[in-house]
Length: 113
Image (cartoon, rainbow, N blue to C red; front, side):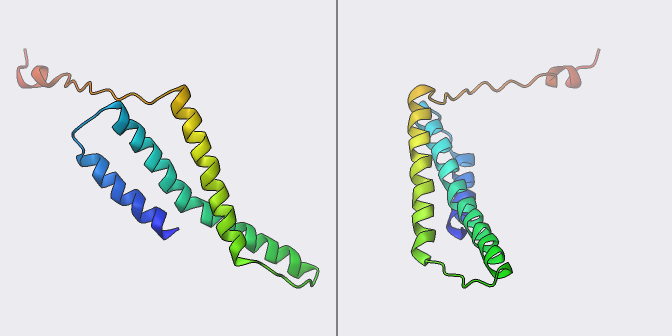
């Protein structure tokens, strides 16, 4: 969870200072952003589901057993699903960068008529 958070912040700074733009860089930006968000939010969702399971089991006075390896397997499964999604998305519709920057209205403000 913390790894995904710090990777997201680090990659945001790297993407902000990246001057080069190409189809590969745009694709990598999308991939890294989604992977970091997956590493950030999936552990939170898994922990919330564990808390719900604990609540349900304690209401009926049952013993709660949770395997720590299940957390790792659920995280690995979600990352695998994300990679499959990204591969399909990139093969069907690759992201394209556009560098169209245009300042409109600057000359009108400097030279009022």
